[in-house]
Image (cartoon, rainbow, N blue to C red):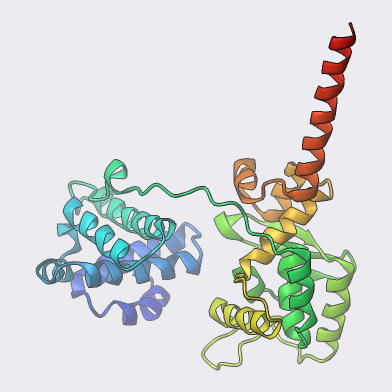
Length: 319
C-alpha cells in the first residue's frame, strides 16, 4: 500500500469498514500510479461517502461494510437522491462516472462480478449550454474595482492566458519564462501539457507582484498554514466580492474569464486549431463545444454570406 496515499486519504474514509478502506486506498494508489492528478483522487474520496449518505439507511449499513455489494438499484437510488437535492445533470454524471471507475476496478480485480453503473440506465442527458463570456462593459466594471495586485493578476491569468482556476492556484514561479513571455502548464486537465503566452498587461502586473512578493515556490501562496497555495473556493469568494463591489447583478464564475479568453481570440481571428492548443484540449471537438464563435465574428460571417446570396439571386433575376 502506498504510504503517502494512506496518510493523505484514510482520515476521510473512516465512515467505511477497514476492508472497504483498503479497497478504496488500493484504487487511489492505482490511479496515482497512472499519473491521475490529486484533483481526481480527491473527487473519488468525496464521491464514495456521498453515495453512502444519500442511500436508504438499510443500504447504508450494507455498503458501509462491503462496497462490493453495490447494485444497479443503489446507483438509481443515488441518482434520485441527487436530483432531489437539486444537483445539475452534469455534476451527477461526474459523480456517477467516478463511481463507475471505482467499481470497474473492483470488477477487474475479481472482487465484483458485475458493474453496478449501467450506462444506458444511469447516464443523464445534459443540455448543451453555450459558453458564458463576460460582456466588455461588465468586464471593465469588474476590473475597475479589483484594487489588489495579487487578485488582479489571478484574474488576468484566466482572461489573457486562458488558465483554469486550478491552474492559477497551483502556478509556480519556475513555470514562468519572462525572457520568452511564456508560462508552462504541466499536467493540466487530462494530463495535457501546454505553453501559453504573457500579454503586456499580465507582464506589467506580474512585475509589480514579483517586486513586492516574498520569493517562494507558488505565485499565490495560501494564507492558511495547512495549504501550500490558494484553492478554488478562495478565488470563487474573491470573484463574488468584486462582482458585488462593481454592482454587477448577473453572476459570473471565475471560469467565465476563460470562456471570455476563448471568445475574444476567436473573434480576433485565431483559428480553432491554435485555440485548442492554448486551451489545453485533447481534441478540437472540445474546443468546438467550449468556445463557439460569438458576436462580431458570427454576425460578420452571417452578413457576408447573406450579401453573397442576395448578389447571386440578383444576377439570376437579371439573366
